[in-house]
Image (cartoon, rainbow, N blue to C red; front, side, top):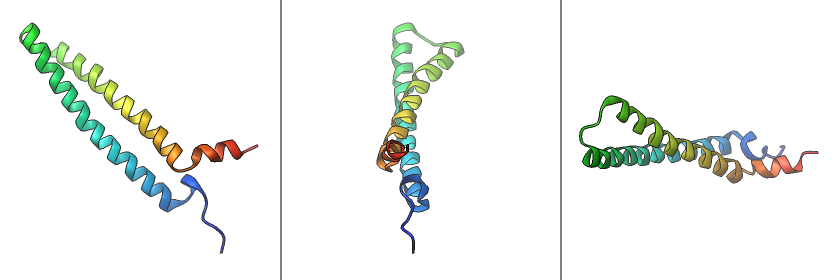
Length: 92
């Protein structure tokens, strides 16, 4: 019996890692919604009623930034946690 493949080549470890990544992204979606909601409330308090372009800008800017940051950091954790980084270093 051969040893199981390392890192993301092992189906069980890959399934666990991607499930953890999806969980992280679910929490980042909640964080993005809270950040966007808080920002819209603060902007509405300062500037009064917001038009649709402002709302879309806040959603895209703040929500997009939080989601992109979460995705990139999640991929770093996924790569490091599965040993994928070490696999790359070992290849000639």
